[in-house]
Length: 361
Image 1 (cartoon, rainbow, N blue to C red):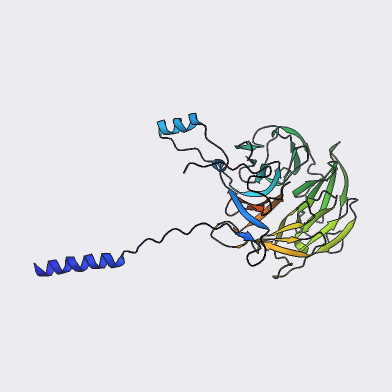
Image 2: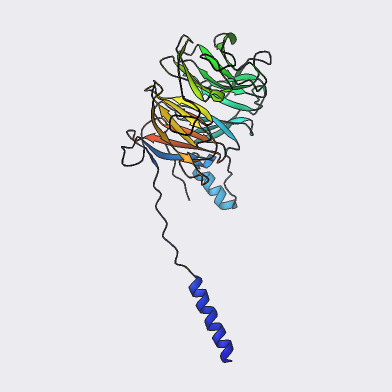
């Protein structure tokens, strides 16, 4: 009897000894860039993952879910690639869903574009939005460009198998008259170039570049961005550089080289510009975004490679865009997310995308 009592007491002591006091939750500190002691320029604002990140339930919907016990339907991204933002509407190409995912922040709506005929998408990659709100999508499988209006209604298709080898990205010129499309080509192809369309007619105006390492030549170009001054920039992936061009399409300069130090590239991918002319380049291998001025000089970098998926942590970052108010939108394919960073000088309640909903947790 005494032995049984002793064993019971020892068991209780072991259980008590193995029990740990729960640690208090650590308050979330949104990352800022550059970090202290430097003066911060950008602060994390939000992550877009699912429809309920922006959709607000009506009172009727809340009551219906409560009464029926149903779970709120959740929709999100499967394999996002690129992002384009216009007046608070965030468009993300999703190559697996074969659609463009729209996060309409001011309108608090979530929807898919390009899932019905005649505007059916096959494998959308690059995306851009013109000043009038029209959406342009590079479909790498269908070898064509798809255009939709601001409501996502199909307008027309441009290009063909005779024009493209592998269209991966595009950008609308600052004056809205031309469309620049990156044709990445392939290992055994020489069509590593930029195809320029006249948006009035939908016809090809000219082709810029060929495969090579010289100025105005490309090796596996990936993504492209334009600036309001008319200059445009191409991520020349296989040459580990960015090439800059003037508004008349003449070569301007290039920057970057292969390496592992700031200002160098390992796997450059996405690109965007801001109102000041700064150039944002995503490096998928580094898991970060490097910001250069309009001379190609490095200013700072944001993010780091990591497996946590927390804000500022990336495994496969790909697309990037900067909206009219200076907010930065970064796509990560692995974590299926879009991180949004706000300039510290911009108030949380300012700008087109300043309408976060209050979630009922």
